[in-house]
Image 1 (cartoon, rainbow, N blue to C red):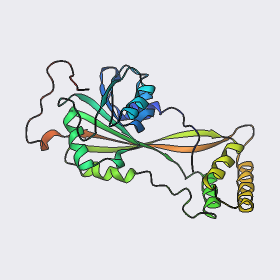
Image 2 (image 1 turned 180 degrees about the vertical axis):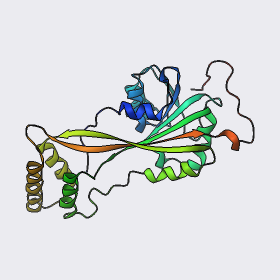
Image 3 (image 1 turned 60 degrees about the horizontal axis):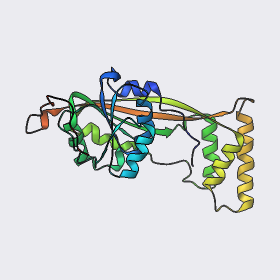
Image 4 (image 1 turned 45 degrees about the vertical axis):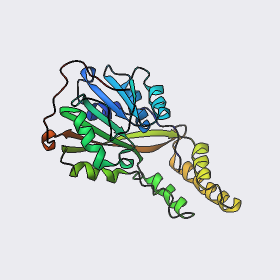
Length: 252
């Protein structure tokens, strides 16, 4: 089920994920899916570096953070000197990466004590009215509202010799949604459903909305920003990593 536009990435999540003070931090943001995070980081004075494997993905990041320094590069071949960044941020895409190759590379470019910040924005189905909505939709399709967000990939982070002190925290987001928008979301989820059955489903969704909302306040669709942070451990590298002695150098 598609969702309405989400609000800005929570400031509390950003402050927990990225080392303070942000004003003195050099932060590498990996991948176009991290655009919501780099947009929030752009409101700080951190030195931002945007990286994606394609120029199109890089444009997505720069659209949100025009002052970020851009680099087209794969996450497993980062063209930066060792110990270049205080933090590396990956949002919504850790599970799409070859972590056996990527995690050592991220560790290499982090300063001693640097942090890998990982997050996903996921729907929170624990709220009663959302559970009732899921029951209605699964009456049509048992797989409805059962998406896999990819958070299981964090297990690889916990098992990596390059990172320690893996911590987890959730930050809630509430997205206002009107009766019409909720019904449109459900209808878009079932584009091939026969009209009579779709009409029955939408009637039930409308009734659910009316019984759950408190006019004029709309219902709030709940999400969680699930966050993990881990501290780099350089002890597994066979050669000693030396921080750059001058300003950060990088390749375009």
